[in-house]
Image 1 (spheres, helix red, strand yellow):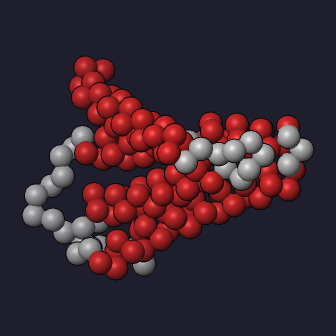
Image 2 (image 1 turned 180 degrees about the horizontal axis):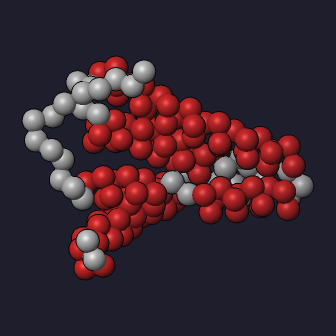
Amino acid sequence: MGTRGELPVVGAVAAGGALGAVTRYGASLLWPTPPHAFPWTTFTVNAVGCAVLGVLMVLLTETRIRVAPHPLLRPFLGTGFCGGFTTFSTYALDTQRLLAAGETTRALLYLGATVLTALAAVWAGVAATRAVAPVRVRPA
């Protein structure tokens, strides 16, 4: 498939990414983080995004459904929406902001807790979806 054949995928990722980024920005407006505070909004957005990604990947790749999902659904929702919704750059900036403010303990807690929570959220999303969805193949 040439470059032209990839344009629909690029468009789906871009549209999903824009929607995810706008959703994340909306969350930051609804729940702003005060200076020197633990960045709960970014932390929560990243955890929720990882859980959603775990759910999506099971639904789109492992479930028994009668109709195959549209081929652009995974790039739109997974790479696009979840990629735009979650944010490594804000996570890094929040960590740097806390360190610059002398909040070393809070920064290190945020740094480690985000990674552990994100991994746990993906696992929980996958496990919960496999428990309730008609799974085609259960990995060993």
